[in-house]
Amino acid sequence: MKFKAKSIANMRKDAADIFYDAVAAVEPTAAINRYCKFDGKHYCIGDWVYDIDQYNRLFVVGAGKAAAPMAKALEDHLKHRIFNGIIVVKYDHIVDLDRITMIEAGHPLPDANGQSGAHAILNLLMETGKHDLVICLISGGGSALLPLPYQGLTLKDKQQTVKVLLACGATIHEINTVRKHISMIKGGRLARAAYPATLVSLIISDVVGDDLDVIASGPTVPDPSTFSHCMEILHKYSITKKIPKTIRGHIESGILGKIPETPKAQDPAFDNTRNLIIGNNIESIMAAKQKAENLGYNVLVLSSMIEGETQHVARVHSAIAKEVVKTGHPLPPPACILSGGETTVTITGKGLGGRNQEFALATALDIMDVENIVILSGGTDGTDGPTDAAGAFADSLTLRRAEAMGLDLYRFLSNNDSYHFFEKLDDLFIIGPTKTNVMDLRIVLVS
Image (tube, rainbow, N blue to C red):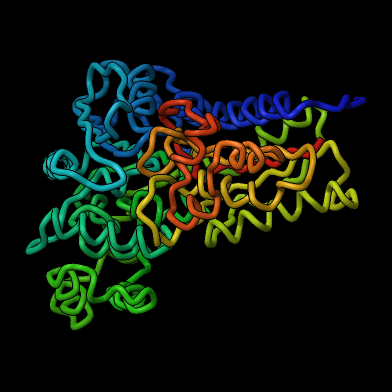
């Protein structure tokens, strides 16, 4: 296919279209329909077959940004077979449900609604018995949406701890390790509450490597981490004195064996438990690859597992884009470079933004003297950090336009204020909640 040189405006449209196709590939209803089939008697989930008539009751529980459309898909499949159910979703991530109760709650910081929802789910599961079937729906955001503090801890303790962990640049694996050890429902404890019922979890992954014990802090899987790991994380980021004394004391008591560890692999709670990932970052990236190729680009997929400080990762991507322009390596233009994963931002300023907007802002500085580059970084959930934007665009003209408006990019970057920078340029990527979440997608186009 012969490729005609495109304008920056057309490349920005291409980037958005690639992003939309990537998100559509992990839309929760489509994911449920791919993996789950009901013939009126048997519910097939992946390679597993469940004879619904053999169970006394069917329960549905879950939490996450994608939980509502996942629950709707289950209702469409199983209709009146569902006896009862409760899910917790982020505010404004709702759909109409008939059989399953839906509770809206706070994300990324947990709130009282989430605590009430988590408590209601735990109480519901305590009613289940050996001849019941529980389907658990898990997706990104589940950790924040299921805050049930361990005995002796408060929701305020958890909120403050999460704030400190988010600000220090800890990875999601590290944040969720701590979350699991201060919770009554995470780290396998939901599975323990459902035991001895049969439990199967349908999971849309929002973590690097699709580690089951990290997604939503692993409520239905064994937890390999320990209280000692939690303390190592606090020491690593020098935040031991920044978290509440009650949390620190709880972790110390756990290390001394005064508080039971999270359930491990040998726990009988997992004898009747199965977990299936039905959507993840690489699926969205491969859909993005197909769309980019259809638009005439040569495509390079870097990785779906990229982590690290956002500004450092951003400059690696812009360096690759400049190499494509200068030498035609690692692939010739027109080129599309794709990556996924989840970077971190060590917050030093007081501005507003998220890791995707900060990524775009950092790349804008590096590509200012290079023609025909467009970069879009966005969260597949449609929200980047505590903002209404999924991410932002940067291109070869971004810095020039900013200077013409009297905007100091360095000041915005140092203040972690990417949102207001791109807002002034009208370069925010605002698409609203997608009701799915498989981490971030970064799209670099070179014409």
